[in-house]
Length: 376
Image (cartoon, rainbow, N blue to C red; front, side):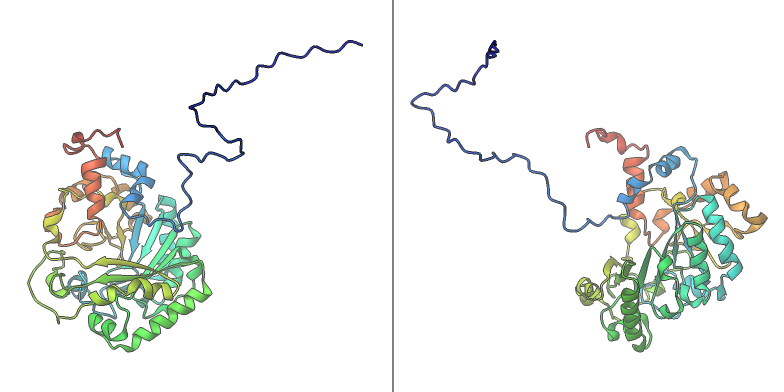
C-alpha cells in the first residue's frame, strides 16, 4: 500500500525583529473603518421641493413644452363661502365677491372617473372655502378612491363629523392654527366653542383610523409683519395697508409640535405670507403650473391654487363630455396663460421654492450653466 505524497504547503512567514512589536494571538476582529450607518430612528421629512425627484418625466415634459397631465389637482367642492374668517386668508376678498356654489353629486361622481382616465395622480380636497360645507363630501372621496387616486382632505375641522370615508383618504389635514380655544377664536373671528369639538373629533378619528396620516396644520401669523386678509385683492395682489386686530399665534406655534404629538398626529407649520414676499422671489416665470390645477364647484379649471379665478383655462371642464380640458392642456392657449403670469405681481406663492429650483437648476438657464452639473 503506497502512501500518498504530501503536497508542498508554503507556510506564511512572519519575520520578526527585536524592535518589532509582538502581535498577540487573539481572535479579536479589527473594526471596520467605515461602519454601516444605522437606520435613522425616523424617516426624514421630505420637502415639497424634493418631491420633484419623484416626477422626472413631468419635469422633462415641462422643459420640452409637452406637458403631462397634472400630478396633483385641488378640488374645491364649495365656492364663495366659509364658516370661519382667518386673519391671514388670501382668498377672503375673492370669496366674498362670489355667490355660494356647491359641487353637485353628479359632478363629483364623474370627476373621479375623468381624473383617473386622464392620469391625475392625486387630489387635494380643500378650496378657497371650507370643503365640508358640502354635505356630499363622501361622494367625492369615494369617486376619487374608486378611480385609484390618492386623496388628501384639508379642512378647518368644524364639520369633521360629516365625513365617514376616512379609510379612503391618504392624509387628513386639520387647519387648527392654535393650541387654545381663546387664540383659535381670535385669529379665526368666531366663538371659542368650536375648538373643543374639533379636538374631540381629532381624537375620535385617531382612535378609529390609527394608520391615517393625520396632520394638524398651523399657519404662523404675525399681526405686525404678515399680510392680513384685507390686503389681498381678488387677483392676489396687495391693495391696502388695512390692519386687523393685533392678535397673532406666534407663541402657540412653539407649542404645536408637542400639542400634535399628544393627539397622535404630526404638525405642519408654515408662515403666513409676509409683506413684500414677492420681492424675495428668485424666479421670473411660473414653471410649476403644469404640475397642478384647480377644479372648482362652478366648473372652472384654474391654473393656480393661490390665484384662483385669475388664470382660468376653461370655464366649464365638463364641456364636450369632459373632452375640452385635455385638449386645452399643453395647447398654445395654455402656454400663453402661463407666460402671462407675472410672479412679482403675486403677493403669495405656495410653490415659490419649486419654481426657483426649476428655473435655476432643472430647466436650461444661464444660471444653471454656472454649475458643474455632473459633480453632485
